Length: 216
Length: 184
Image 1 (cartoon, one colour):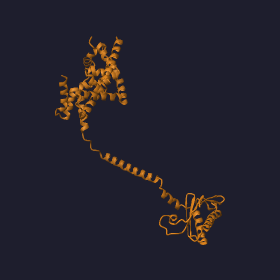
Image 2 (cartoon, helix red, strand yellow):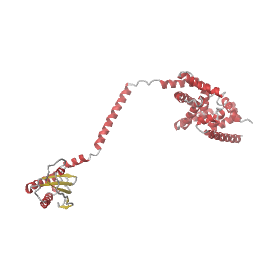
Image 3 (spheres, one colour):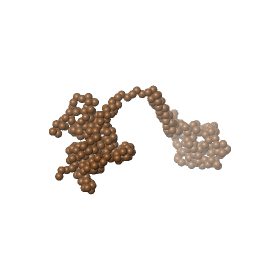
Image 4 (tube, chains in turn brown, green):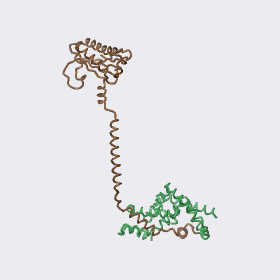
């Protein structure tokens, strides 16, 4: 028996496919679509140009604004941070330091005293003349620290109307004046004969400086 | 004979025809074949017309992609099959198609007595069952029996291996036989 599926072309073409043909109208549509594809793009209206340029400008400005915002938001580098902290020594601390510095220079013949504050830590560099021996240098340093502590005690934080943040820690470094300074910060400029650090804590309520020698 | 036909098909690319003339000739040769093949996929005349237009536009755009290893017919059929399958896969178009068909089903329900008789004929029943087969069997059966393509040509069009095509043909035939037996 013949396979009925072999009759399929005949069945479909004479049956339900008989009227399914591609008409002239469809052919024209295809050609029209191709003409549309090949046609050069129509010139844009003035409104399009205006709108396009306006949008570009607005986006450009927004982009620059974002970059500026981002640049302002980025954390400062370490040097800049340090410099900012150095200039922000509160008024009360400056007054105490100035007084102590003045006393030390006049009464004990100290070569130089430099101090700066970073956060809540006060760094003090004391440069003694080279004729003072180690014992004398230590005693003078202690007296300086006591004076700082004493001044703090005399002017309690509350009494200063919170003019600035007092230090919580004092870090002292001692140097002996020697050769000509070459470069760098004051501490680096001077020859260190011996150095030791004092790390002290001031109790703000009682104004008592508690400090310990951490190296010698 | 087949060799002569293939040469004649490839002549379409070798003749010094203008782009438009080439397309017109391509349409003259394949338009009815393409629209009928598209119909077997979407089962809607209007849609088949639209998809056929799309096929010829695509043929024109991708004219340079034609490789002479296959015949022009296989190339055009492959494009048709891809476009029809893309259409069937697209959710939005499917939705439009369903809406369209719902509208049409009311109109087509009023069949003339003659048409009813014709539809009920044995041959028509066979055609009906073929068109109701699941797509993967239907397309193979139609390409083989209706479009009279070889297994190798079908494998090129559907991008499937020849043994797979043979298996699908076998299963499709089985399915059809069972359905027709059940219908008797």
